[in-house]
Amino acid sequence: PGESPLDLPSYLLFACLDAMCRWHCTTGELIAFATDCLGLGAYEAALAGECCDPSGRGVVTYRDFRRLCGELDRSRGSLRPGRDLLRATSRAALLEATQAQSAVL
Image (cartoon, rainbow, N blue to C red; front, side, top):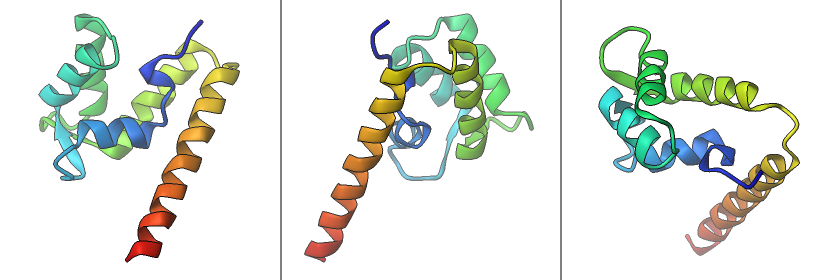
């Protein structure tokens, strides 16, 4: 199978979800992101929203989002060499960009 947005590292996905850098998002934002960007169906996205908002306050933290990503990884299978390579490459690119930005500052 080909790569999926779910193959990206959870911190990168959450950064896309939390474009305002609030360190959280709403359950509604997560559900829309899950359907529009991650390719989950409406039912799966609603379950993801419930899973990521255990307190029922309508707020999703990165910690809860990361837990969801871990569950999705387990359900999709742990042996995905393409995913591991994509995540390693993403981490390396982010590290390189951070180091380049630090050198400029």
